[in-house]
Length: 455
Ligand SMILES: [Zn+2]
Image (cartoon, rainbow, N blue to C red; front, side):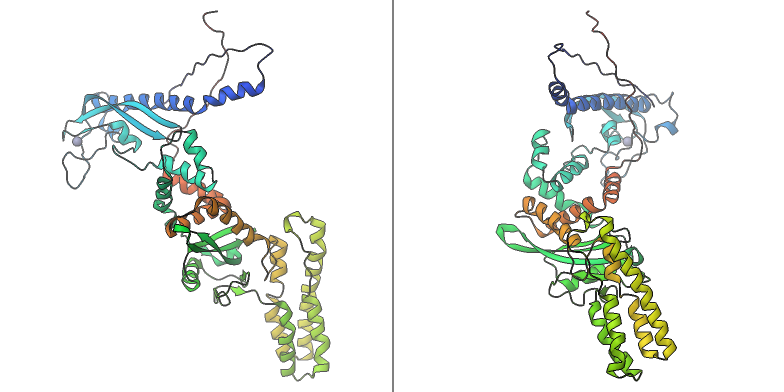
């Protein structure tokens, strides 16, 4: 079904005096109200089209009446749907519909079912606006986004959306965000895992603890793994472990910033980033088992020490130039090769224990360098990424979550994480929630100026 919308506006322009600011300023004032009026016209047309189908049963075969006219059978305690698709017209009813563009005041057509006698509005049914629906997802989306961006006050005031802070709280708590985004994460996609905690102010100024676990993908992107309020680390560990499926071909470093209680976090799933500087000590022991004396093994140990001691430039990774990363990359590649050569030498000399120790070690000897080269994270001392993530969450939570419950803070921190770091998933989530499936599209055809007919 295709229709045209025509819009007629008139403007008055003082030639040579009107400037850009004034023109834009005036246009902006009409933005929402213009859309609201268009919406109203579209809905009136929609209402007429549905009613025509439900009443003109001779013109429209039952197949064409299948979609519209769905309603609950009159006085049915079990709320079963009626099969009837023929109706009488029963006038209009005034109805206010809340939208993000503003509140729409319109008359909707009423119908009476020939089969069961139920009176209903076919338009509201088609729009999925229940007769006494208090929670409208249309607003929920905007409010949620506004809360995350900490500008919900402006949204509410600017668009006369009548919602209190308590209402915002209810939307956040009632969100099904905790049911979404629970998909398993394949271990091989993760390049690293991090966790940290931060204090949040809650009800009556009491202090809560927000804990967040994130993964870093192979592409260096943040993969939210979980956000928790006032939850113990072992509980968090269980939830996160449950979500990570399969095994990676190399250990996933788990990086954390000295948080007590995280020393064995995710053991079996991730590898706590071990200090590469301790590696030579282990080699001494292995070579001793191969029968080497200290003075024989010392040069080998020094060699490994030197190979793993790649210094990383300090400072923020993002502002480093490629040429600053280049020396690290070169040295990393050279060192990797030399470790392999050393392993071969050990085998040649018959140092079985030393060779297999080094071979085993070599798989994660440079994990921190590889991690840094692709993400800028300095392991095991995390600097940029998780701290930035936490600053992001903390800044927003501090401004909006004062006095909020555990459930609200948990949901909110999840939303902030997902909106910020998994934009495509966030959009997909809302598209599904809002039921956007491509059943309505609108394009601007032409915008042109015509002379005023009274000229
Ligand atoms: Zn009926």
